[in-house]
Image (cartoon, rainbow, N blue to C red; front, side, top):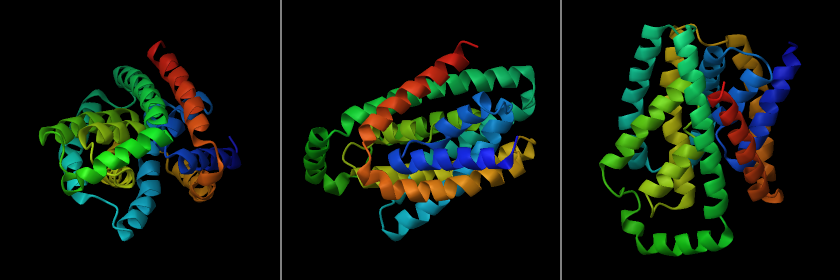
Length: 267
């Protein structure tokens, strides 16, 4: 497979991530499996480090703008990081390229893609101009408690679920994470929700990705090619976001993700 093909794929995924904010894992992993025939454990392990590197730059930029709610990030990481270690222990016990591990990863990946499709479509509905205006008014009334969850245990427990999903599939820290944050932190402004989602994904994907690397589940040359394409793609997408029909793109993506998820579940 020519190197330029993977660079182009990385650019296309990066462009969509920049335009819509949909997690790269929900796009890159099925692309690698379905279009390039990469084995699931290699696609997942490589994509985890791909996500860690791409989201690190976003976190630095958001932190400089003082948009990252670190208390929220800490609560999510308290659940997701231990769960990632637990998932890595299970994969090491099974053997990442064993038949049982492959079945676990593909079926979990299918379920995660279906959840991501639902979460992406939910965001299409929630982020309509009218709903955003109503939400902004409600958040302004509760600004002092914006980083307080409905219950302290919810972000830890839901973070643990996302940590397992991300470790087994590389999917979950994007659209699913944003949906969880919207439900658990209803008074947190949207820019800070997005910032929290990106920031907590960095340590999670880094831990999970390095764990996969220790299991031999990372294709390093492939990772370099994907990054070479994705970084310019994200840069371009973030600058075109105001000129594109974002809700239409999200709706189409939700259908494609649902198709990929159903195909993996029914394999």
